[in-house]
Every structure is written in structure tokens, then in C-alpha cells.
Length: 223
Image (cartoon, rainbow, N blue to C red; front, side, top):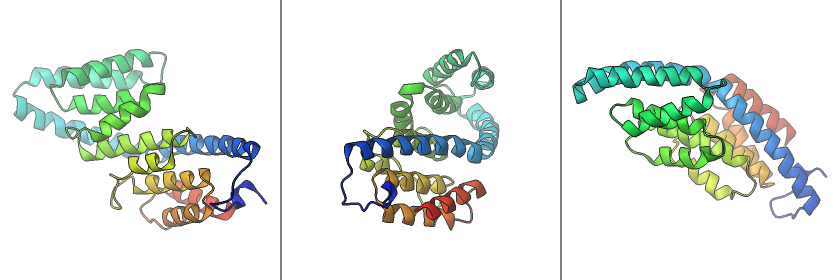
């Protein structure tokens, strides 16, 4: 009997639990990376569209084109540095924009600073997910990003990860990712029936990224 054949009420030995945690940590980490590969183009496109909208909305709201020009230039400069040797400076720059709070770029900056804050990412993303001043789609992005990171930590209860996903509805762009996270959590908890349910749901989502649906199908075959 493999670890993944265990029923939800069957106890694992300490050694088996250790192995299972290592396997699930690797799975979750890989899924988190693949999530960004799947959603990256959509998110990037959303940012561009959002910047264009924010430019017009914020101009009329604040009547200060200089503030918008400054925040947009600083935001784009910081985004260009993320992922490189100057990532820390980029996060510091995003934090400054968020602290100024003059324009909608503050919301974007808060999300992307949190995404690139290492060990502090989860609490920062959770705060952003609850911030009603941030557009809903970006709050959902914060929620799903936090959830993927939470799966990696075996000390975080499954119910807490599930609660992180409660604001993501069936019609959300991130509904497929939420189903994947729930499936991974079920595997971590040795709840095969729930895992099958979530991965079957994901595999049947026509609007889910093809790679994500393919991963779900492979998971079902392994269960």
C-alpha cells in the first residue's frame, strides 16, 4: 500500500508522515511555479490594461497628472528590476509607492511587493487579499498566491488554507487554481476522495489553462 492509498482515517507512522510531507512540499512548490507559467501572460495583460484604466480614472479623481506620472514611472521601473540582482531595491520602491497611496498604482505596488517578499510573503498577501481598496481581481491574485505558499508549510492547517480561498468564486479567473490548491491540500491530508473530487473538477473546467487541466488528469491517474 502506498502513502497515497491511505484512507482519511488511517494514521501514518512518523517516517511515513515525513516522507509524505517532503513529497507534497515538492509537488506544491512545482505547482506554484507552474501556476505562474500558466497565468503569467494573463496577469501581465491585466496589468497593462489596468495601467491604462488607472491612468484615466486617477487623473480625474485626483486632478494631479504629475502624481500619476511619478507613480507609473516608479512602478514600471520597479517591475523591470524584479527577478534580477536589484530585486530588493525593486520591492523597496514598490513599498514606497504603496505608502504614498496617491493613485491606483499603490494597490498594484502592494500586491507585487508582497509577491516578492520571501518569508514575509504570506502575511502580506493575506493583508492585501482583505484590503477592500484593492480591485477584486488583484485581491483574488493575492489570495491564491498566499494559498500556494501555505500548501508548502505542513504546519498550516488545511482549514486555514481553505479559508484563504473562500473569496474565490466559481466564475473567478482563479477558480481552476483554487481547485488545484484544494486538491493538493487533500493529498497532503491523505484524503484521496476529496483529492479526486477537486482534480476531477479541475480537469473538467473548460476555461482552465490547458497545462493545469493536464496536471489534474495526471494527478487523477496517480490516485
